[in-house]
Length: 280
Ligand SMILES: [Zn+2]
Ligand SMILES: [Zn+2]
Image (cartoon, rainbow, N blue to C red; front, side, top):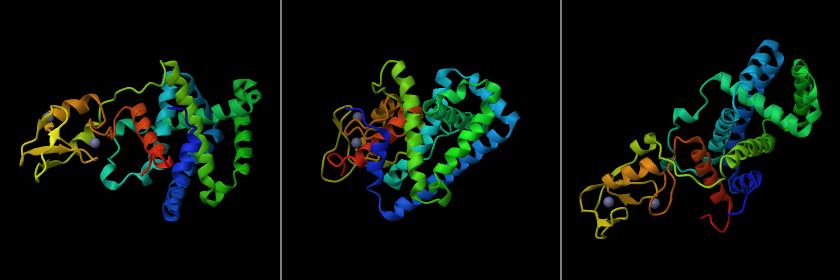
């Protein structure tokens, strides 16, 4: 599959939304952006908090940093893909993929600002580290003036948000490719999602085969139904979902507690919605 630009995929998906859905989404994005900006303003205005956060950031390995950004990306993708998931196909979030501490959130927002500055204004960070706070303060307040759409809370918040998603994507993608390419890994389905799967009685005039063991399911017996409505023996599907989060018939993806697997799943939802040949 060819490489798709995150902003193109997201814009294509959002263009299918009705005006009320788009308006709900932009309100939700606005409140998320507002939270990050409030944190960042707070960090930049306090010398103590700034040096504490920077020290914390510097103590992290590249893979830890990547994990921070991945969590940030995941929360954005959850927000962006929510309008495309019918209630029966959405699952509660598992705490392991959410932000754990305010310190992590602080580190992530500062890291993203540093990445942005390094990309657009690399000379700014060649000053001694003791000058970074005042330099970043200046760049940050200038950037706030240029994205005045944010202040109105309208759909103007969406574009910068998508740009941030693109930056996170690049950061995480960079590390993923260093670790042996972007080949899709198999990840276990989230136990929380598996516990929520319904048990249904097999019935009707049609014989139903469990594709895992290739045997017919006995009428009247309970079977496991995935959100895509495919049926399996419980004893067949449970071991399967401990290794993979996909339906054996149609590759519908269940949520996973693996952060990168979950990013891939939500990304696939956005790609599907936004591509006219593949969507429904
Ligand atoms: Zn079976
Ligand atoms: Zn299926």
